[in-house]
Image (cartoon, rainbow, N blue to C red):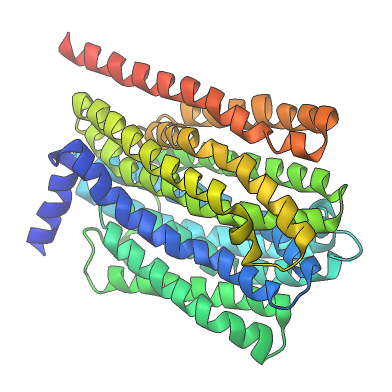
Amino acid sequence: MQEKEDKRIYTLSKEKPAKAVLKLGLPLVAGMFIMVLYNLVDTYFIGLTKDDYQLAAVNLAYPIMMIAIAVSNMVGTGAASLIARSLGAGETEKANHTVTVGVVLTVVNSVLMTGIGLIFLPGIVTGLGAKANTVVYTTQYAKVILLGSIFTMGSFTMGQLLRSEGSVRISIMGMVCGTVANMILDPVFIFGLGLQIRGAAIATILGNALSCVVSLWYYVSGRTLLKIRLCDVKPSKEILKEIFWVGVPATLETLLSSVAYIINNNLAVGYGELTVAAMGIAQKIMTLGNYIYQGMASGTQPLMGYNYGAKNYARMLQVLKAGLLVVSGIEGCVMLGFGLLAPQLIGIFTENPEVIGVGSRVLRAIMCILPFVGAVAMSRTSFQAMGKPQYAFGITLVRQLILYVPLLLLLHHVAGFYGMIWAQPITEVVMMVVSVGMLYRSIRQRLRWESL
């Protein structure tokens, strides 16, 4: 066990920057590719029902899943940042206490979300943009997702806690097990039991439940660097303050993304519910590219947090440069593939020529974010790792409310549907320059202060 612990710490503190980024990032990217199947498998099997309104309903209900992740992100990101910094500073007991508190808070938050969501479900479904042909399907899918939010949120938070200590491969195992279960159960519930869209939601929740159980088993079996302990169930004021200081802005970031997603869907509904289905398929395919930059950014987060705690600012700069080069290069290749194969990719999920045509144009527009958005994500997670959530939230606030939403509304007004889908690529180009500049300047300042 000691050898494994030393190897984890070596990766965080001394491994060559590019190698460390790849070592922590690539397994996470691979695991996230598996997680992509959660969305794509549901979309694929629902597509086999030949009902494009059910496809649209999955897309309309997706913000509920995003909100569940946003709430769990509050605990996961806040706790993960504190754990990485505590390990870097040699405060192992504090790191152990934080893990347990993170698990307890996740359970409490999931119960609250389920209760509030079910009470206001009819209004929520209407607000998501569901119309006559999709309201029943959206309600069915959303209700199951809300009932199983404890597993969705638990799986997400546990993965972040494991990655914060460098146990990336262990976190991947939970993701893989959950996704494989979802792939097996989808056809069983959708077709075998005739539950259709409700069956897709049940399969997703059961997959998340298995993922959550696997992660917990690793903690209980003693294979992790840190432990979940009964003596640490009661949180200290210091730990709660640290978790919420970093976590609340992280939650607001995801919530703002959900709001932008809902606005996007409501605008698209004006062009017909099949347009929503086409846009939903394109966005689900884009998750393949999105999870690459998210995985690399999450992989660099413990590196940045550990070295910030250890005051090794020179290494932080090296990690930042290596991470940006790696993620931009990979995403450029993915963008090329999406551009060449857009109709074929959309055609996997539907045979409707209208949906394929619209979806291809949407995918070829939004794929242009890929070489730039990774830099934005890496800057944001680095600020979170450093315990500076105000900067991370500032990046999201500018990105979503000051740039993206106004651009979305403006381009929709000027050029209609095909104008509004270019709002995000324009936003990400601007934000890459702003966010990387902020992070580089912040680290350079720390480096200068230490040299005085």
